[in-house]
Image 1: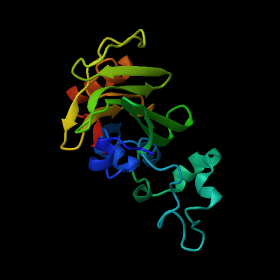
Image 2 (image 1 turned 30 degrees about the horizontal axis):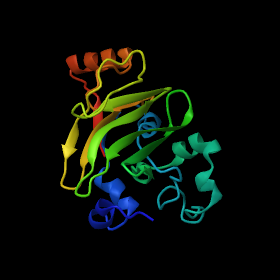
Image 3 (image 1 turned 90 degrees about the vertical axis):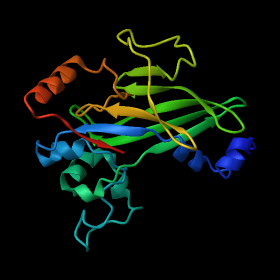
Image 4 (image 1 turned 180 degrees about the vertical axis):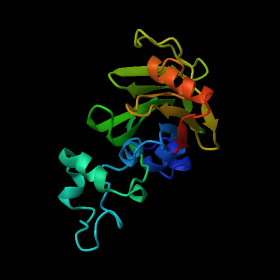
Length: 223
């Protein structure tokens, strides 16, 4: 079904490999100094977290296919019980292909945020096809209610964006098989932007700067 040269020769015909080649590097802000629940709330995890050894007693731990593992109506109760070792960071992906482009969507799940459970935000990379190596044009991230566009090396024009957005540039980590976009997620609400984006929540930015000045900077992990 997918016959273009790059996908066939560089990815062995695998959409999963295509997603791995171009997978973003996600910087997640967390607060280890808070209570355990608030720290767990900011960690990426699979939707069916808690179905691994250590989360339950040996006798009552459900299997990964058990409906309890996927019941997001009780996700806050599940998150309160789960151990840190079971919050394995994962990224879900979906790929749309046209004659000229790949659109690679990455979705990141947090079991809870500061106002509601079941938080899913992500980004879509826009790649122009090439037989040797696709060309990264840019990406669109999800930040709360906004779709935020970013451009790599001015390779495309932005025709629509949130009214507050002033910065459109993005950075990448150059790899042999793909340019890995650098992205960041806020703690608490998990809005996603290009790494270094300066127009994140102003209150969050001010608080982060204040904590740096008093010698208590935010903790951060990269996945």
